[in-house]
Length: 528
Image 1 (cartoon, rainbow, N blue to C red):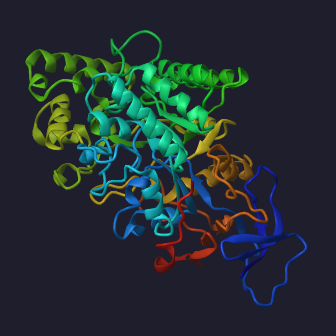
Image 2 (cartoon, one colour; image 1 turned 90 degrees about the vertical axis):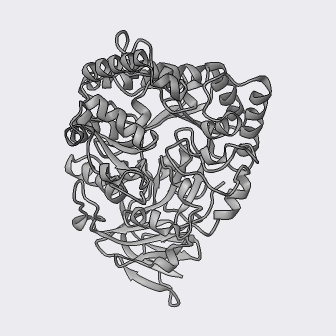
Image 3 (cartoon, rainbow, N blue to C red; image 1 turned 135 degrees about the vertical axis):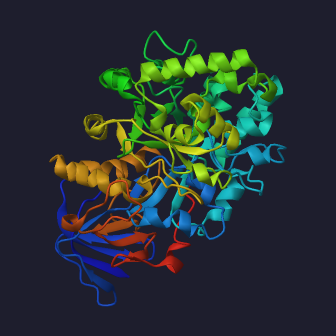
């Protein structure tokens, strides 16, 4: 048994904190008492002047792709150091598991964003059993629509035939029965961007029957985009994309999550209030929708996300035709101008070792290095990396927008970050969640509200049982931190200061600020 004495309890709800003792036995909280607990055979830790909260739940992650790697602790330890104990994975249409078994397209699983596995995890159940008790944090996962579609049809743009649609629905239904938390769609990525609305609606209806959730990487998050034709003009593309998500939610009644609500480019910052109003009004109409957000003004993506669907659907030879290149040039340059976003806002973070010399450089810097124009440098970077380079994209937000989003009642908190084997890391790996707490502190908004959004509210949203609250009978996923010493360094690969203890399923993985790697390596569970 472990006894935490005299802690300031932020219990995961929006209730104010209170002082209490907390008793852990094995993986469970067995008592919480304001009058004190005495237990002679317990290991006692004095938490006077320290805060105790439920372990943080990352509401949007892609780290299912790293669960099956050997020595996988390296991909999770920096998250643990900032208090993360559970991750919601399988987002943006891509999951490591849940697809047609024996697919000839196994090497494409991951969609270019992530490496698939040489092992066949077509069975969601098989993957869950493989990682249970062998992963540093708790993992639950959506099944990716894009992953399933790749297993049936590669990244091809054609409409699925009748047999493929039957297989798609069957695999979704089977994965949901085997413990998937829902289905994710990546409408800005291949092949999700090629899916017609009737395909998306059919899958959403399957999810609704299981009473689970769908998440959407929407078709656009900007004033203009290459996802629509023409790429400029008319209603803001980011608003059209939200309209599409809300339309699907209305037609199916499915619980819906809009992934990483961002506003790419300065000109997109003008419609933030309208975007939020769309969702607020939908909730008033009975639509179950929320969104998630991170604490940074940048995010991670893949270099080809800028390219329009019509171009991606072309063969390699057709892409080289002069008229094709000219049309692409015009569309991207016009979109860039109307967006308020430039090539110096795209930084190459990871090329998986294919082209290390361009990692850590923006497209503008590459243009100067190669002595060519920026558009040509962008296309050359695509060619050199087979359009699979990971990038950090800037001008996603500003301080005012971040404050508006993080305080919104429909917001959950997440990182959308993962550890690269090569190149530049996404700084959210190190300090995303403590930054949310400090933003609340610095703006004099309730700390308990911030903690609720990354604990119990997220647990409730994804139907995670017995986690996210400090309550008798709940799992002992806990974070102990010194509020007065909590700090981080912006845009640095350094762990935050102020975290004292972290418990995952009752295992003391971070003790007095030091990570016990042996214990941490196998502390997490697969959550169905």
